[in-house]
Length: 62
Image 1 (cartoon, rainbow, N blue to C red):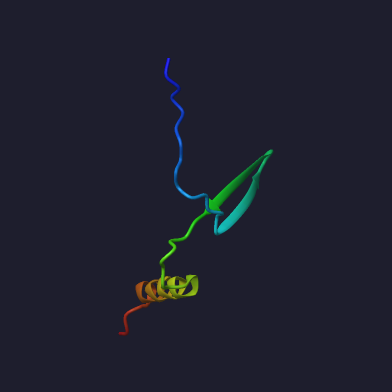
Image 2 (cartoon, helix red, strand yellow):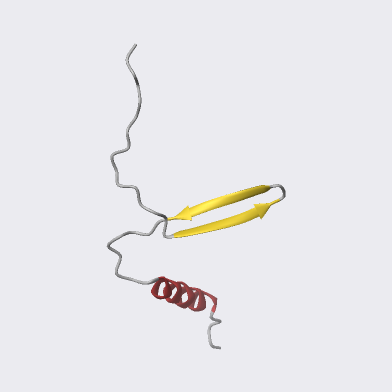
């Protein structure tokens, strides 16, 4: 019988962020990866989110 091992040929990369959350007796570990060629920062993205949220919640002037 043939050996059916799968090989991952991608380069191993450490996660950009790791978060651990305890829920009861379990610990959830979430690893995050960001695109390598990105030009915007997390602060830029958050600013856009806040601007969009502020525009959506503004009350029209009477």
